[in-house]
Structure formats: structure tokens, C-alpha cells
Length: 330
Image (cartoon, rainbow, N blue to C red; front, side):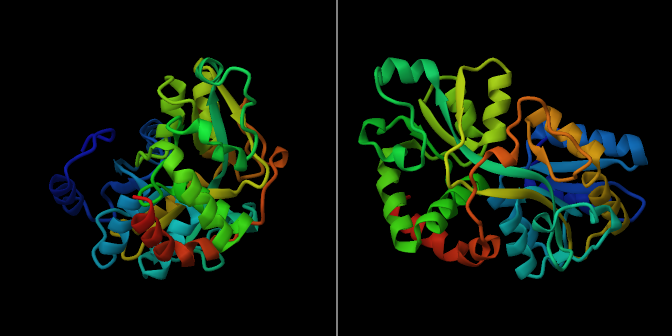
């Protein structure tokens, strides 16, 4: 298997099953971007000698795979995705417990109490603005600075937000509104915003890309994704709205993992300062390991006004929220 190729499901399953012993490859389901996945797995192989193959797909697809395959997992590790998705997989009995000394320095908010998942970087939501397109379409209008500013009807068709059914980024945004405003007021906000959205792509990286290329004016995305596109020369202004949410990208091991030893080594690797600094250098995420430094241009969590986000509530409500979103929005 070539590490950077997205193979068809049948071929992937055949290859994974063929290499299921402890001395074989480590198999990873990766929610983080391909560039980061390749860089991290290459470094892991360089340091340990353990080869890695991976499948890169959306959060919803891979979490559903992990749960469906819990009795016969076709991968060893789930890399990435907000913590509530790992909670969902854990509640389904699909994750292995692994309490490691490598997590001792990791803050309590970034790891599960039972050891089934651990965070390796902080994720915070924000608003991205294509400055040139905004000035052309909304001359004299103030750039939105809060979540409520997005409800301006003038922005209809100019906002891009990912689909929370498939994307952990969008589900985090939905939960931000439900938790900061309350259930009823939060749904009123979401159902007012939805008709103003021009596109609901499945990939969490899509809004930053679409506003960067000037196809839309306003995008809701992770701040690190917006910062990355800005660093590449795109005319993007970052806005960190008050009452936002922060979560962690997490890693977990599949229950009944066929290469448990290598999976544990990979978790330890992802919790290291070296791995987290490498990831931040590529995509501007904020490391959770206190010994690791975030890339220049990333926005420290201390500079962002965050609500007290209840990750367990977000996980418990997910089915109900997604069902209502599907029925009332798309």
C-alpha cells in the first residue's frame, strides 16, 4: 500500500488483513490532512523502523468504520477528530484503553479519564474573510466580528460552512451555538443561519480553501486552517469571535487492534513534543504537550474567548442533533 493513496474499500480491507501480525505494518485511519499524516507517519517510521499505511477520509466516515469494525478492526489507530467522536466510538465499545506515561504532561482536558483517547493538539473555531471579495461585495460594511454577525441577511449565499453530519468542524460549530445560547435559542440561530449558507461541503478543510481562492466571502473553519492558508499568501483575515469553543484533535487505539504494540508506540509518538511541533509547523495547530512550541503565526488559546465547552454533552447529543439537522436543514 502506498501511504498517500486513498484505496477502494475492498482493496484496503484485503491489504490490511494480509498484514495483521504484530511484526507487520501499523494501519491508521486518519482524519487529519494527508500532508500532515504523511509527514508524521514518515517520521514515526524513521524513528522506530515500523512501516505505516493509512487511509485518509472524513471524520464521519472513519468513526462509522471504527464502530462497524469493532469486532474485527481493519486498522489499529484512529488519528484525529474532535474528542467527542472518540467518545462516541468508546461508548460503542470500539476503543482500547491505553494509559501511558507519555500522557503525564498532557493537560487533563486533553485526555479521557479511562485512557481510551488522548489529545495531541488544540482546535479552536473562527471566521475567515476573503478581504478582497468582501470589499467588492460589501463596500462600507463592517467585517463580522461575532457569531451573531453572521446572521446578517446581506451575507446570503456568501457563507460556507461544512456539513455537521460528516465534519467534526461543523459539529463543533453547531455545539458552540447550542451551548452558548441554550438548546432552543441555539436551534433558532442555526435555522436562521442555514438559509444564508451558500455551500455545505463535507470536508472540514473546505471553507478555508474556498474563501482563500475567492469562491466565497466568509467561511467558518478552524483558526489553524485559516492561518495556514494566510501563510501561503491567500488574502484571508482571521476573526476569533467571542464565545467560541476549543476542543482537541485526539488519537485512540482500536479494540482488538491487530498490531497493538505498534499502535501504543504510535500514540506515544503523537504525544511527544517532536511530533506536535512537526504538525504545528505544517498546519499551525496548537500543541497540547507543554514542551512543544506552536508555529509562528498560530493564535495561542490564551488569546481566544472560549466558553466552557462540555465535550460529554456534545457526544451524548450527537445522534439527536444530527437527526434534527438532517430533517430541518439538509
